[in-house]
Image (cartoon, rainbow over all chains, first blue to last red; front, side, top):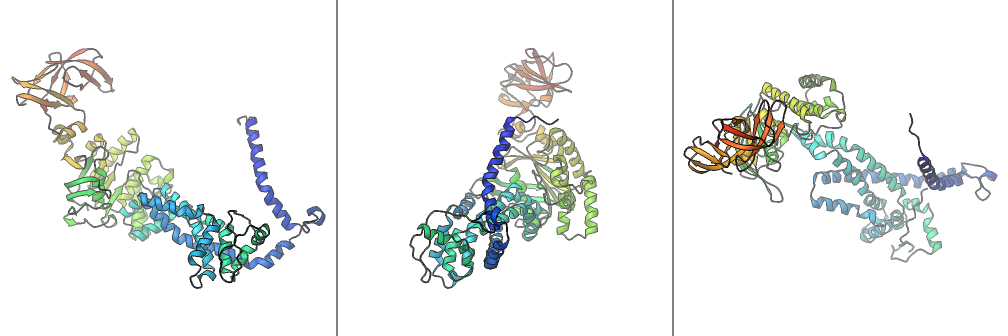
Length: 264
Length: 342
């Protein structure tokens, strides 16, 4: 027999539904606007079309490709750096390791804009680095690395990796053998979760990219963020602050604490 | 195939400076099962890890396998089998994968590997579990898989860290018998660590009793029980009745009467006896009042006060006395015996 569900359950469902609608409705509206033939006249009067999508793809396919490429490059870097770091942290229970773990999360707490500026201040003068796409990559890796490390570390600690490794050693496994046969397979769920997080964050991170990309300026990757037209919006709203910028770049970098998160 | 282990002045100090093990000498004979018994924190697991090669002794300590110096050899090159308290089975592999792991590392051809895995699973009486995931196993099954995995590589030495602690009492008893039979059949040198004295006495050919980073005594279960080297050993292993009194005219005078001095030197004396060395005896010369009687099925455990300075425990079969009864006791030689110092 099914247990009787009271009014509380119905209220819960209703509330959950409301929250879901509240959150999803704006997304739905955005999508609708994207396929409406004439937004001024409304979807019912003008009908739906994929023309706008096509146009955006025509204009920005390259930049979207760059964003994806950047996300994948970020993923590659966080895998190469993050998994060994998580492994090292999992194996060292000491206080120093815990400190390092916390320090690693710092870039998440600092606004992306600030990190971007810090990168420019620190590396802006170093040869052609500033005008190279890897400049943006560094910012993204800095920001996403803690997510990879945390996710991987959590799984490594949950399966008690140090003891599993001792077991593998007792059976004759050297470092490489046990890293391949014990560490990686057992940390895989964490690495996967971390990877999804890194790609999502890299695609969505705007502020730091904006700063760094303005520095890059001539690189088409800079267009990836200007695609969002946010810099123009800032100018209109008078949010920009004048900061020393690169010689050839117009000084209109925002240092305000707003974190607009737009998704293309 | 089984090796003799020789520890020479093996001490161990943690990175933070705490001494886990004082310099210790210990010889383990080939084919022997040694139980390392002690309370938690006494250094017994450290001792096991030194033998395993998971930790290295402070200089100048040395570890010898069959006379060969393996002090600096890490565990992966010592050919030891190890069973961990938490079993440490690989969750990414099934049972057969776990048992065959060491064989795969040794590049044993697939057919032979499968055959050997099947043989070990049969020996552990779990052949039907070969393709089960390890998280679907019960505690006892995990224990058997862990044993099979450690033994499948045919190590010269088997090390077990609290192997039965995580199991419930009945299963522990059952596996204790099985493991004991297995070790005897394989004649493999085995060292296992436990804080359970019944387990140590049942499984070990010899028992090493440890306290605070040092070995207090090594000997057979009988030696440890009947001729403890220190008061700690006497108290840690089994139940001990402390009989503190004065020896005069061939008798040990206690608060509740006397017992035969049994060779104890005249003057103040601290003697002791085990529960089974005392019996209820209407003709006894020592008397006390029963404060508790526990019915254990095959016997009754009786606690008596007033006979000695502290409570005295004895076990009797048949109808036990009731709390409040005044009873008389006598001791069977060799009790009472002199209790060694701490």
